[in-house]
Image 1 (tube, rainbow over the protein chains, first blue to last red):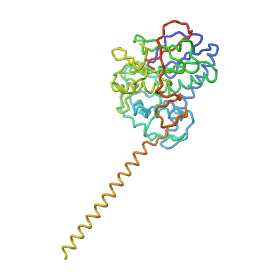
Image 2: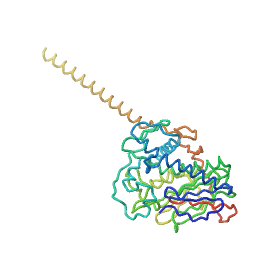
Image 3: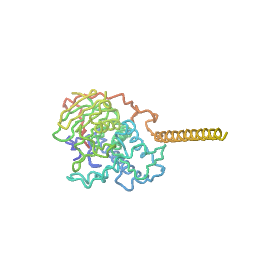
Length: 298
Length: 89
C-alpha cells in the first residue's frame, strides 16, 4: 500500500497521484498554488521520461546499450545522484538493482502491482554493482544485461528540483512531498513547515516542523509491498533487506541526502549506527518502538 | 669437464626461468592494479558545483555535516500551512 495522505487539502495545497504514490505541493502564497502545481507536473513528467525503467521510450532505457551514449543534462544529474548515493553508502544504495527488482515481480509501475497478495515467480539476482556504470561528463555506459533502477534517488532528486523550481520561478516558499520524500525551498511559514511523520495509519506518528530549506525522507519495509516482499533490496543478495527497521526517517538539507541515508539505514539494519551518527533520524522497530537520535525532537 | 658444463647450463636455465617467473608476476600485478583503478574511474557529475570527489557535499550544495534543527509541532494552526506526511512511499 502506498502512502496514505490524511492531512487536509487547504487553499495552499495541491495533491494528486503519481508514480504509484501521492504528490503534494504546499506553498506560502496560496494564490500561486495552481502555477506551482503546473510546474511540478511538468518537472515530474520530464523526470519520468528521462529515467523510468518501465517506459521503453525513456532516455535511460534508450541509453542502456552497452556502449557509451550521450545523455541529456537531466538524466546526467539523476544518474550522477544515484552513483553518488552508492559511493557514499559503500554500495548499500545501488542503482544496478533493476534486474533484481524485476526478478522479484516489481517490473511495472507500482500502481499496477499494488494489492497483489502473491508474488509472481521469483528469480533472485544480486546487483552487478554500481562500479560497473560509467558516467563521464554526459556520456553514460550501462553494460549489457545491467538494468538501472533510479527509483531510490530519483524521487528524492525530483522533490529537491520541484521545490527549488517553484521558489525560483514564483518567488514563494514551497514544500514538495512525493510519497515519503519531502523537500522545501524558499521562505518557510511562521514556525516552519509542518510534517506528519507516519508510515501507515495506526503506526506511531509525530508532527514536527522543518526549518526553511530542510528536507525529510522516510524509507519503509511495510509500504510498497507485494506478496510478502518489500521494495528495499540489499544489493549484495538481491533480496528485500531483513526487517530490522520497519521505518526510518531522516532529516537533512537535501531530500537526496535524507533519502540516501534512510534507505541505507534500512539495508544496513543493526549496522546503521555509524551511518546516522549525528543525523536527525527516527527509527521504528517491527514492534513499533520508536528510536530517536541525532537531535530528532522527542 | 662435461659435468661442469652441465652444471653451468642448469644454473643458467634456472636463472632464466626465475627471471621469466618474476616478469610474469609483475605483469599480473600491473594488470590487477590497472583493473582495480579502472573500477574507481567513474566520474560523478555534481550539478551543485562541488567537486565530484567531495563525499561531504550533496545536491543542495550544503555540507552534509550541517543538519537541520527540527522542532515538535505544537498542533496549533497559527502558520496556516497545511503540511504533508512523510511515510513509506
